[in-house]
Image (cartoon, rainbow, N blue to C red):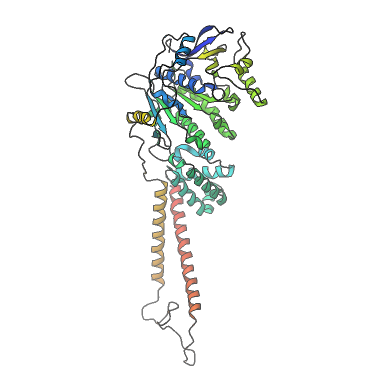
Amino acid sequence: MDDTGKLFIGGSRKPDDSLNKAEYLELKFGNRHGLVTGATGTGKTVTLQVLAEGFSKAGVPVFAADIKGDLSGIALKGEPKDFLLKRAEQIGFADYDFEQFPVIFWDLFGEKGHRVRTTIAEMGPLLLSRLMDASEPQEGVINIAFKIADKANLPLLDLKDFASLLNYMAENASELSSQFGLISKSSVASIQRGLLVLEQQGAEHFFGEPALKISDIMRTNPNTGYGQISVLAADKLMMNPRLYATFLLWLLSELFEELPEVGDPEQPKLVFFFDEAHLLFNDAPKVLTERVEQVVRLIRSKGVGVYFVTQNPLDVPETVLAQLGNRVQHALRAYTPREQKAVKTAADTFRPNPDFDCATAITNLGTGEALVSTLEGKGAPSIVERTLVRPPSGRIGPLSDQERQMILDKSPVLGLYDEDMDRESAFEILAARAKQAADAAAARKAQDELQSAPPAGSGETTGWTLPGFGGGKDDDQGRAQPRRSGYQRETIIEAAMKSVTRTVATQVGRAIVRGILGSLKR
């Protein structure tokens, strides 16, 4: 950070490679969102670290996903290596120094950071359908499930809650369809299979309590005043790209829904870096893309800046791309038609610089070099400049396991999210209601049998008796009728038992439906 209210990005170069001027991102435009793109190995992660350090130093909290583990080094002081010192000298960065930044590590699996959870209810039907890659009929059933849970006061916290609700819906599809719309048993079965897939992919770690509080990723360090940098360990999470993208979109949605309107503050309240952003839009249904566009457009007024990090600018839909005011474009390759189109798209999004051709420059940029354009003045984009990105102050590269644990042991959220909590929810409530209904049905059946039993001493029989206990009848001539074979007696007894079982099951099912539907009407 060089001047007050500005974040130092690097030094721009003239066509003859001489230093031109310093390039900044004005903090008052930090919530106008941004884009960092470039091929693998061109310096995107270092640029992300530089931006995160700058925002943190200005007192702005940051949330960023760490795909390869390289970003974790920001938690410790950098080392004075030759190539870093040389870059600082090239751009005239006389105040360059090394320091560590306050970091909170997070991990959905609880292995490399504090556990991150949310509930099924907070995820909502739209994102849950996206996570499960649900078809349109399946998405309709999921919406009905949420409606039933809401009306019947059934908290949906984790996967077993949702699974138990689906079981109830499948067993009582006919009765529920008349009130909530068609519930196809085949759609319910498909959703249940999808839940099994989610569980195998580790999604059960994500759903439950205690759920993440938004305030815990918007902290500032009380000693330095620096914004806390929340780093999400995503190397294992990336094995399930859909879960990764859905989680980050859920977090954005939570920020949008919970934070108050602040207009255009002097600096952002939070900056959110969405690495591997193409995963958010790959095969996304139109309704989800529209949701992303809406959140990005409106979350600005909540003081949140969203920065998409991806290899290719074509990865981001035009409707979203148009809202990203701050651009850092690293080198792109242009061998295939799609790559050539990406270069042209990237070049066309910049305000032209008469000193060089953007499209040509993009293919010739060196590592750690980028085309930079940020908002200035009244919010207009600056002329694009060919810029050497400044070296970071924190360490470049991953932490060791011991170093990471040292940071975790001093975390301001230590102990808040590391233990599971399992309070009464839909699973327990439905199980208790089913038991209560079964007990009531059994009591009614016993009462009915007692009332239909013949008076004592009447001589009437109540059914077949087992061999050796009498009960045979004489014919008209007083001769005893031959007893039926054991095989026949077993067959009739089995049939009678099956009939009783079906009767009890029907009574229990009806009692459960009456109990649940009765609670829905209250």
